[in-house]
Length: 112
Length: 117
Image (cartoon, rainbow over all chains, first blue to last red; front, top):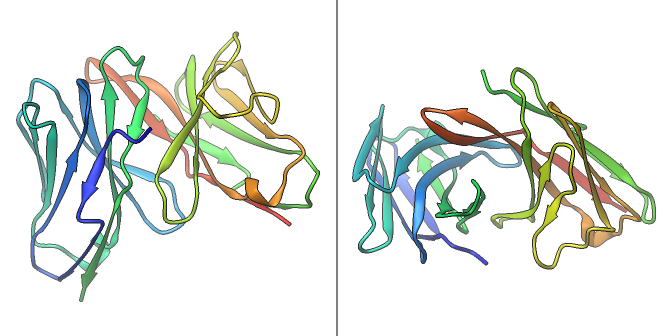
């Protein structure tokens, strides 16, 4: 069953704007990860945030985690056309032996 | 480091034939690999966990006799889709588990596009 649920399902923004994507999940987790996937290609790991962390940064990416609300957000600042892709959150559930459960994904379109 | 490859990247086969997909960890050893399936515009669904030297663990609803997994070495897992049918057409992605940053992380292959005619 799907653990993560992202919203919005599709997002279209202008280059230079910030993009915020949200993910909610249902059970206790060890960590939450965000991935990017370009059309028809493999996954690119963006960032991992552990259950005891609240915020992480990596370049233009900022991820937050609120375990009380069972939600996470991914912020991409100063978006570029090359950021156009599908974004997935994935949760590693506590006691799940490193298994990941992926959300449905968000399609981000950045207009030049 | 932590590079995972898949072969082939694309395969087209006739209905009823079997297709083997390889997943290799190129610069590390992986006792655990995972196989996922992704239908168009959908998410990745875990099919099975492949364990080196032992039987794979399949997720609920995945037929183990149809999707044969062999993890004979620490760098190679194979997925064989037996008697493939058009509904098996999908994007198959593997990942390999490696130690990273004090924990474990899955490193993903580039995927294999299977089309069954």
